[in-house]
Image (cartoon, rainbow, N blue to C red; front, side):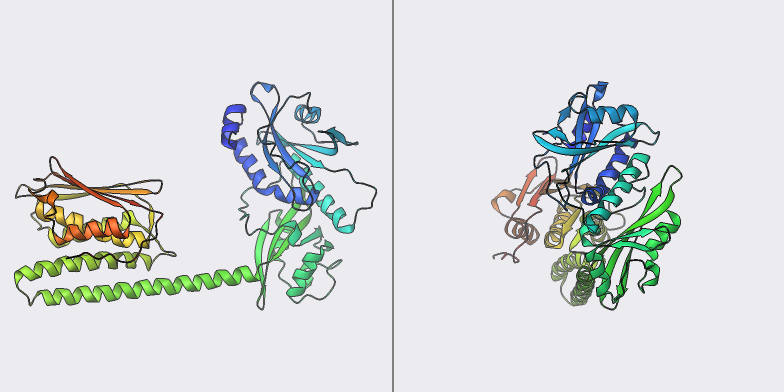
Length: 488
């Protein structure tokens, strides 16, 4: 089945502006489906005007869907659904007086033209609902349908959805969470039972209906903005430990966007906000832990440097290498102490590690150049910490053993493809010494091999051709285990 992007590209002549406008509609039309107790379909004319293709489908949460099967990608010729062709040609809404028989079932259809910025009709939105059977509509149902009619009319006039309104679909209140309908003066014309309950939890005991929302004792800034400026607003209202999310949408009429009322959706987000605050506190504690670990590691590195002044030159070199390993781990913890999670920008860490090695190993007159290319993105600390040590060891190994007085270049290349990260350290020096393949490696490369193969479940390889090339390939979706044993 084609994706929506492929459908738009292959089957329609939509412009980028029209696609952006339709994307806004698709991000907002769940509200319309719920208020109208109906399925929504979005039709776009095919290239050449030979029919229509269904670009999107929305099912309501407030009633049973009429179309359990996916209709996206279905093609319709004008004669198969004359309603769509008629509305597209006349650029005006149409509603069937009598139900139409579709796939053997009676269905009421309302079709709304969706204008683009230049008033050209870019698509047709159809509203499909079941006919009302011998019963009277209740107050809630009637108010839902009246609000839906206003929003549908706003779609046809090009004033809904609202430009610039950023919605979080997981957080935004839905109709079933609680709905309040306001007139132009801000008086409550109707409040759903769930909305009344939400206000009760904020301490409002008076009857909402007939009252001005601004006078019930709860912040009504969102509704006030919607009615006074004709723009949507969303705020958190806190009373004691309770938190209510309010989203206010103005009802607009005509091209001049005249405000005629507003719809206020409410949702009790007390527990959600509590969990968010808890998460922020936990993240602050974790950052503080990383900061203290970094400080402790730096203290250990300082002690090793002091110890290095009191030992023979051979031991000094070993202590310096140990200090650099500790500094690499400390750098990752320092980065984590400034981040909000457990992921670090490893390209930034690698750049700082290379500078650290360069400043610690290279004489100012040394003719060795260190280069870094590639960006593996953000890596979990369980991967970034051992990988930082690996990088330091490989660069240090190249700087110390690859070159003579003529100098040379060390290239670090990092690449991430899916769940695989590869890091190669290549030099143009004298290559690997005889017997290297038989295991005559120093402690640094033994550390690299153990970290990559045992802790990170990766592969470590090397070759010598016009210099030395060390390659590390590790999965990025594996949580690392305990520090491996290096053996003798």
